[in-house]
Length: 127
Image 1: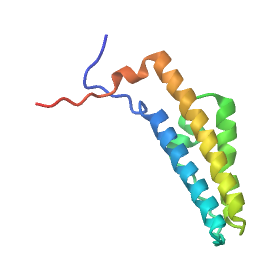
Image 2: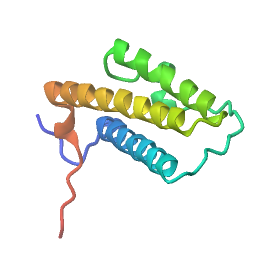
Image 3: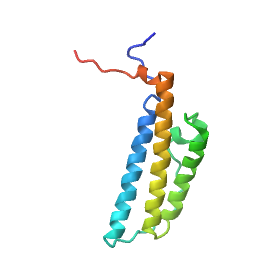
């Protein structure tokens, strides 16, 4: 039975992963363009920040475990290289984050379609 007006809290999870992938890909390209134009990478202070809750292992995130293992390594790598001065290493770390998030987005979207999760997305109606 189709429920109208009901929305699963994580029905847009694959879209958010895809958006993260696109943003990381854009950051990687910006770093490469900056390096080509002669800019240097200003070292950032290492941070111990956590990713958003829905991206953490304890959040019951959906998707293949092997893809999550790859993804989980990328924020630490990015943080590590951002503390240095190699702008191309930063670009590569962003590219790795983009690839990992992109693969997860595709896998989660496939799971969503197979389980009909997305059929419950709220559809806005105009009066």
